[in-house]
Length: 590
Image: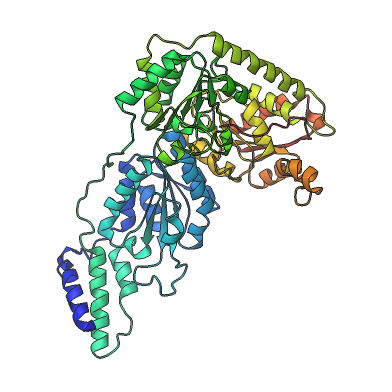
């Protein structure tokens, strides 16, 4: 009976034998590269492995830049940054087993940051999966909870439609990571796979014949129709949009509001609405805005509408709050900071995020599952000629300036030793180039920077997002630099593409010790050494500067020198020894 089943099963396979081009030198990696090029992919980040070599070689031949990293997580972080800044899908390719497991934190970070990332992973050959092959594990089970779409390619002819589908899904609805697994025999040429599949010593008798037949037909099905012409162009990307009725109702609510506030989240930067058009729409509305995540910088450096301080007080006064991609999670006190007297318009592509905690602490007046950027453009058009009463944003801006003055006073205070971190950040912000992208990676120093550093324009700020992952700096800076030619970030990294790294070195996990010590009476595991990060940078071929209290007067000159060195092609690390300041509000607002 088993023999009859095998015969019946492989009758279907045998009919495809004529479609196999046994002499063709082509391989599956070429199909992957062709789809990526057709979708406008310019970079693929990787840590090379034999499972995926055909993909990398083919990409290089087609003009897609292959950027190799020293850790698989860095490859995914870099792809994440490219996705956020370019409006396309970021692509990373890593080898099987530990190569893929090393990416899990970075993939989860992309999922929570709603970044469209394609992860290409190698795998054991189709015939050997589950049989103890090198680095063979159940990879699909690991990535299904993390990705919008997971699949394993089983035949070479499936590569093109599978990759096209994955790229479309990554960008549709709420963007996020997707994973495509490529068994090694789907990527290499026929003659090499045949050599590996064909048995060296075929057993005699009926079992030998069955084995040979099975392997031959498996190989035939693997490559049947592999090189037939296929459509490579992008599939439609499905993006939810607000209805005309929903937009009209919001137009009416906003037109009647006397003290409206907009809380802008990262979703406002997603395609298809251009970020500069969104900026014009916000300026046309004249509504004061609090910017969070990737939307930092949306209104430029010194907009009268951008309010940076006292968000809680503003929300208490507001009669209307527009949550434009902002989520009522821990960053917004789970919704508790919203006044029950305020009318609330919530817009988000993801329904779960749209209504997060609305069963407990807040209730939306209007909840719209749709694209934030497109909604803002339509809202502005519907309110043509209407502007928020000017005294409202002006009053918030006056309070903003008062808080800024208090922060600057703290920056002038002398710390017990080393440099005041606020003073350092104010100085760097003053000298930062207009085309800089700020990449943040860390805790206390970064939390402070969020209140002091002023991104110069849209898409000029990168932080991990809701997952709060440490270690994103190197990958983010690499991806950002490739997208847009000076990068400032907190954390060091080995990158061939020159960046400036500003390390706030206080030899402590200060954000943790600040609560651990008074509550639990111990600084265990929080105290570090004043590490010579600048020497590490020199060892990697970059340029390092140690900056202490004796260099305070020359800090500006050192930053300018770092900018010159970066333009000359050197990555630069500024190892700034900082002390403890009394600036304790280190949380990053949404």
